[in-house]
Figure 1 (cartoon, protein in one colour):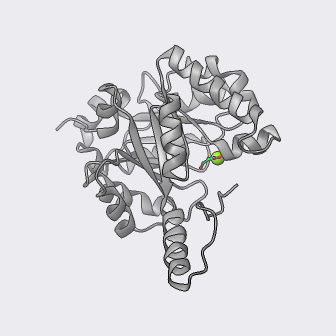
Figure 2 (cartoon, protein in one colour; figure 1 turned 90 degrees about the vertical axis):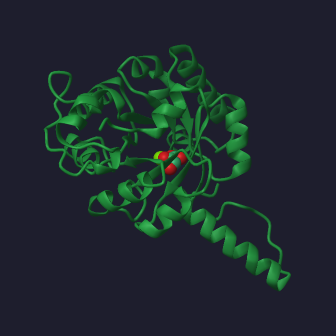
Figure 3 (spheres, protein in one colour; figure 1 turned 180 degrees about the vertical axis):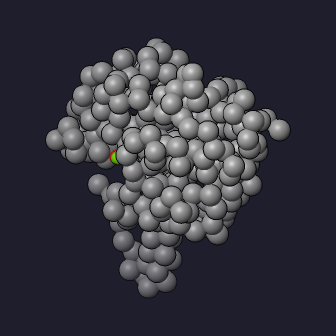
Length: 264
Ligand code: 3PY
Ligand code: MG
């Protein structure tokens, strides 16, 4: 059976791809969210969340069983981390802090089998892609999604060179970007940097993506032209849902939406 990547099909059809962000190592939560109609991809966060590579196999299978593409954000761009994530059946990987074209070149090589790259062969557990072994190898280099995060002024400056390295998705991490630029989240400089990256992706015909915490933010980013947007996270939904019900129950209405550690 060929490798089946719903996210790639959505993007190839020119459709917008809303996604969800998973920070908790729970297959029940992953499946509950993935069953929500319209979710195209789910980011399994092993950079900042509680998820480790021991959770990868169960989470990728829970998510893919709902027709949603699991992408794993690994902690660092190391080839062995990329290999373990892809070997668990991830439909793609996301690399934080892709701060130079050289980093991105090495990441792309780590995602591909020889002769295109350096990935070692051992796809015994890639069930979540719909294929294992030789069937998997036939498609993996072409189909798996490589996403790199733009989170530093150097990668904004070098965005054209980064885009030329064979990545599929350029994914802006707006929180790290504002911190590493030393500017206020949402300030003019911050928004200008985001717009520069978006325009470069559009010119290079590559998928542009950005992290959001709320439906309102996500709607705005889609309207701005982004192709792929996370709409919220598991932990934000839990915190905000409980806080909202509690404040309604007690009449103690409180301002604000996003309540996790990502809040600005
Ligand atoms: C950021 O905004 O820095 C992110 O990486 C989102 O998780
Ligand atoms: Mg980040």
